[in-house]
Image (tube, rainbow, N blue to C red; front, side, top):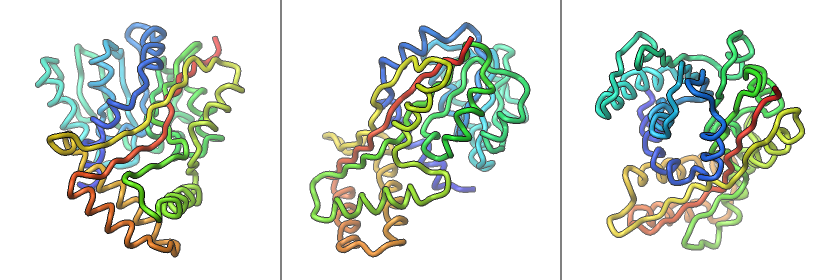
Length: 283
């Protein structure tokens, strides 16, 4: 099992919660129909399910798709157990659970391929921290294609090309440039996905109902980092280290050592610029 990815996904839940744009969230809740059929791309550990329930959305059905079967196995265990602790009568099933008789399933597949092959339309598609990982030219029409008339696509936490670490370091610009170039060089990735997704949605026949900033901001408080966010930041530094391993950046090794010392000392601040977007399909 990929315990590292599992812990990272669970650790970033509090980071995501702070980041989600309230204006776009309110627009979503005003537009979503009762008992929506929900599809989630890149569902990970299924954290979107309790979030929707907390927001008052009661899916008539839910299907979450991810390529990591080991993480999905954890989703099938963690989410119904969490919901039972919250007083929801979740009943385990082989692929997930049932809630008030409604199916919630986690499936292993490529999300874009899955929706292209799925005949059943949905009312709400969610793809959080996902659209910067896939080619927009393929994903946007595929995701719109699975929406029923007037269906909604919610794209929160879409990265858009700005990474900040504090306090300042002389190698910051070189390191973040190398990091962004590494992202762009990865097949299907787009370091400016947020703005490019907005432009693509604006050009389609439906309506871009909402767009707002949803920056990740992680900083220590009096008691240190909230929750497991120290681990979240350690993983971000691992991502940067992977990028620096592909190029020669003057001062890169010292930058990493300094940032890890700052993290251990409760001094490191991190910001990633992102957008939340909400789109309504034609009809």
